[in-house]
Length: 284
Image 1: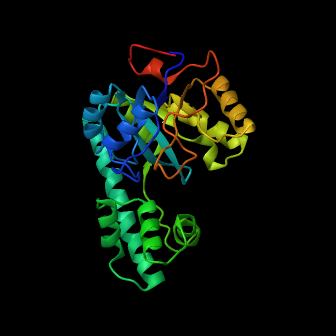
Image 2: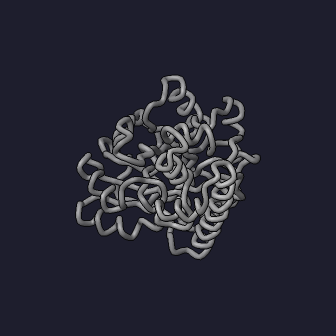
């Protein structure tokens, strides 16, 4: 549906966002968002709360998740939309992903204790996150609060990103398995923020070719802050592969003023939109 204000990629306190599901829905409504998917990292814990808020605000809420997956030993992110979150295989996948996050967090805490000389870091980060499976931004927040780094960016650059002392490689589900489970649960599997991986054009095409053979159906192309060259590349990929377009702000916090819920580029005319696969009444 032309003119629909949507956002199919955003985060709440159920993972590493700053707003509760209710607060996020209210903010989305303030920004005129009509259709919303909350896509927390490897969890659907915020969806039930969000449903009540969305109903009260007249916002269409679509079940969503952002899954961490492995492809050729590289961590990628895959958004799932429209799944039956009670489907047994999907529920098992989420439980497995949460356990992987929990074990990763324990190891990260141990590594940071060795690096900083401080104790009980995992437990302190769990308090910040309100979860036993905290995300890396929660560790970054702890590092800032304990004056180990200047800010969140410094935390990642010094300790948390790939190759740094507290980084932990994680046994996520494979892209193939996660895609199949999302499909079997009635959802649509979408490759998230494809330019963020900094793949060559050839490697991205190889990834998308395999993704399609696994049953992948979508590609995020409506994203903030893309360069013209990046946008052209993604539309070229849409033309080459049997994929529909999706998009979202990847909103985490109102402090990120460059990311506003629902403020994403309009899709080009005639581009197949993910709503056409979601059994919804309106399609673009």
